[in-house]
Image (cartoon, rainbow over all chains, first blue to last red):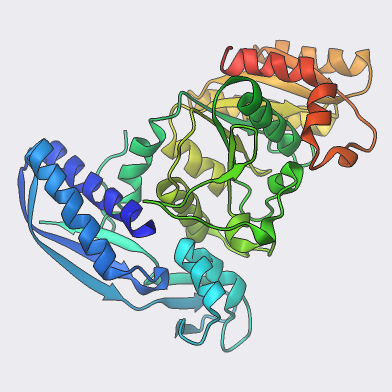
Length: 133
Length: 257
């Protein structure tokens, strides 16, 4: 599962943060989840819970709550400056799968709605980011 | 070591923490590098990875040329029909019977051009390194021409990488090699050797040897010029026979037997 690899990255971040700051317990693990990557939230949560269980047993590091904030994918055209929300629903299933694996492949399948350029930047909602407190 | 850096919103990129962990399994990471295009980086990286897989230990070839990946053509891989498999991460593509695996952005772009810049390039490098479930002992990296985002990001994330610089006897290539070796040295990155390529005669070999001497970098081997080398694309066994001695020298230098 691709989601498992992302969960591993999140839990590694928790362990490193714990080690660097000499903290054992975090009250909230906040995850900003960009919808461009089309992560299966349930699979991600399952993987996180399994891996956090191991982190608790092996390293004594724990997290009380996991909060997931989903973020819509937004692009900005580098040519004309137009900003728009990327619509994945109308896209071919095969292309959506490539975007799931590598969100930047969106540049192959999407153009700026105003000037048709593929030279745009993904400004938000790309992937997964973490905050701990 | 990477520090726990936050962006302006307070969020961190967890891929930065899993990449060193995931890459720690590799005994050797060898990057085939040259800022000059057309000097044979892809040929040498692909041959080196194939030979390592065949003769030594499990090897993965990572094509880091994001805008124009071509290593799959050298391997004879039908990229349009490759099936992407997942098992706790994306699995590299197994190249049959050679103890060799392969990862490339081409697996996801299916031969189409990926028009990206800056931050998006950095994201592709981080994504490939973090979500792939690496399984081999050795990683050979085919790098793109130039020296910008891809190489800067890769060298930031992978500290133990060994650089092999490819240079032809052409003055433009020699100038590029000089430049990149001087830069890497200023960054305290060790260059383990220069591989001369497309050397047509003794004079060409001497030019490469003099380059190495002036830079204080060993010339590992000088690979001769081969007419119509494209005949061998997709048939690397034949090319391995022709360049056997050269590839053995590179393997000896970069990983030992």
